[in-house]
Image 1 (cartoon, rainbow, N blue to C red):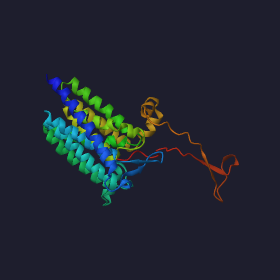
Image 2: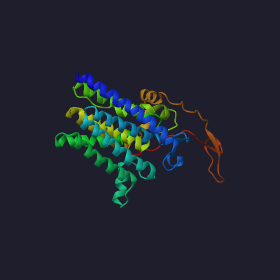
Image 3: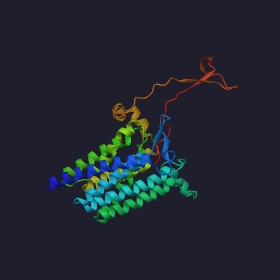
Image 4: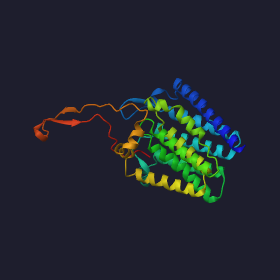
Length: 316
């Protein structure tokens, strides 16, 4: 009976998330706050995309989490909704007000040492604070609250690191959600991942079609909510998950995830599923400036590829 109720609750929260996401995306595109230009960005191909996917997915996921809370899981549903709200609010602030001059923990902490408060630092602090409140709302011993707060804040930050190519962050979210749900099932504890995953999958075609992207608002909200959902796992599993999140986040300061994915055939294949194929653009000859030294073979031109190479590790 409990299992049946759990499945009904998951289906209902997922359906609520899908409906709310579609409605929010339609309304936001019809009347984007601040105008269309406010939400327009340039993707890795140099083409315009909208960031409105992020607030729509966040809104849908939060509605789904609230539906879950109303259907018999008040603490976990409310904790997920709060985590998602914090991720969306502070992520959206960074989307709209951030300059991108400072990247990663080192960049933001380095700026703080020089008296500069970046939008990224505000976001990190804000999501950390909402993570603590969300974890406290979910309940548990003090040690569990600390672990769960780390999962919310760490999950929000880590998923955002993958939002550099179409569909990538959502694919990572789906894989993570499946692992969390499987872990909860094996331990006899339900992990409510239906709402954030349903919301994200609703707009996956827009993301893969390179018409929209999650941005910090959507990626932070999804990651935070998955972190909150992981609170239902046994403590050893949560500690292991937090250690993995911490390790990957630390690695991102030195390594480009995009380069690792590109060099690993299986990961590259998964990354390309559903995406537009890369455009095979020819090398463009650029006439040498007057006084340029001769290049190899005596050629008077240099070669530049129009393909994006993602030279720097992803932000935040």
